[in-house]
Amino acid sequence: MNAPALHIDPKTSALVLIDLQYGIVGMNVFPRSSAEVISNASKLVQAFRKHHATVVLVSVGNLPDAHDLLNPITDAPALNIASRPANFSTLVTELDVQPSDLLITKRQWGAFYGTELDSQLRRRGIKTIVLGGISTNVGVESTARDAYERNFEQVFVEDAMASPSLEAHQGTLKYTFPRLGRTRTTQAVIDALG
Image (cartoon, rainbow, N blue to C red; front, side, top):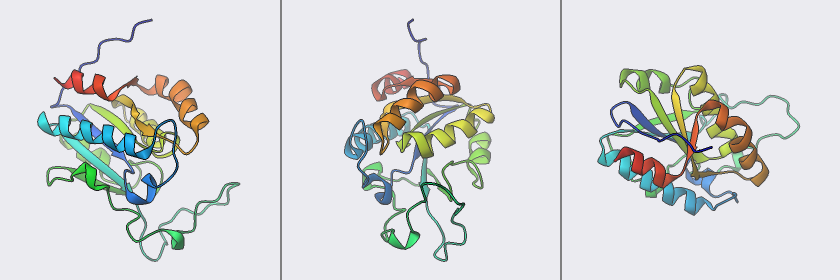
């Protein structure tokens, strides 16, 4: 079955990139390296800015006292916050952060809960979000699920995301994203903006 043609209206669409920050991109990820993800994300950022579309850069971080850190009992505990480098939440320089970009700091996996992301998108008339980032099955998927429940159209940029586990990345692409939106490549999204 052929995928439907993709058209992205720059006036009502936003690029939302998840956790492309030094503390995350240093992980070993699959099916492509963090450098490849960043390169494709940078191409998307440039294309969205060229068309005067909204660019949202999301990072995850916690307050110095760590009282805002989620800490439920799990079988796979999160890394200790004390082990995080000082630049953990700093966005990578390749994104070339601009004053027009929306910067969102989240305290958990998803970018909607406890942040102003939803209100900022709605105030700009955004109907479609284009998602990428690291990691596919955690921050990106959690944000995508929340966006779906808020009735946003979504486009997932498969080659602008990766995960520490190839199986988790592939599982999200195969089972979750098709039910929440459309999956495309960086070039397909750029072409759809033109």
